[in-house]
Image (cartoon, rainbow, N blue to C red; front, side):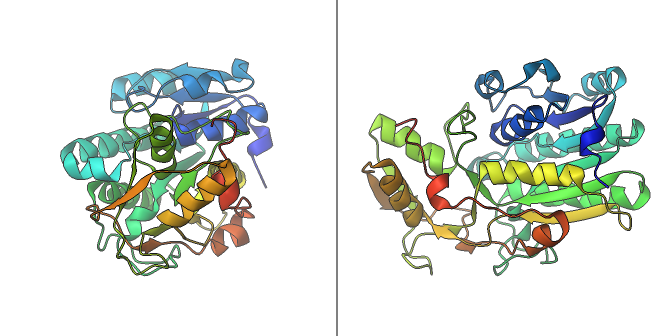
Length: 334
């Protein structure tokens, strides 16, 4: 049975919750009047999305770095935390190639701290924000049983794989904690027609924020590579609407597995779109013309990545329902 409607006196903790995905999840949790704690050091995000969240009386925001074990421990001492959604971590593929040790240190140390505290304070459920990058250069469609760790092309993906490995080992000796690993594909779009948007603090790396920034600044959008084995030569990805992704976490909170305390699910649509398809859809939906140019391939990029989300539907009852046009709809901003 679901515990989601029984959390009135306990908190859901979202590490890195001020970011794009965290604030989207928080939107739906707060809409359901759940009590949440967002922990974020705002190094890669800002509080713009936090200010737009509903029912803020049920929100506690704490500006703390998850790598600081002592400060995190104080939070667990003070509040009864029922569920952890661990999102904190650096996530830019290209930046991880340039600064690998910084990525390993931040992502792994923060995760070790949160896992240790989950055990000490007997948290009921631990949901980890993983990534399709753990599959490396495997042939799509990717299923949860697809081999991981082989052919990973960047330190970001490798850090996620290493954390998954730690979590799996932890699960073997901590049977009382329900652990769910969610492997995200490529979230895009906004929540509630622009109420929550992807608004990175630094120069954006993801496709749609780059498109928006370059369109507004009237600068060219670079497409990295035009010789991939796809329908138009540009790399293809499984893009998922941020609302669908956030609702996947609500389903994960609901889910109970009485036979195995570790479950893994893909969160994607099961279909890939090329960069050029996304740009042309963006132009059509928003009635704009984009200035883009082709450049050499980018290190770490793969050709065509998409998942088979059937397990998420069969087990969680979750399925992505929003299409590419909804993902690309930014008429309220342009």
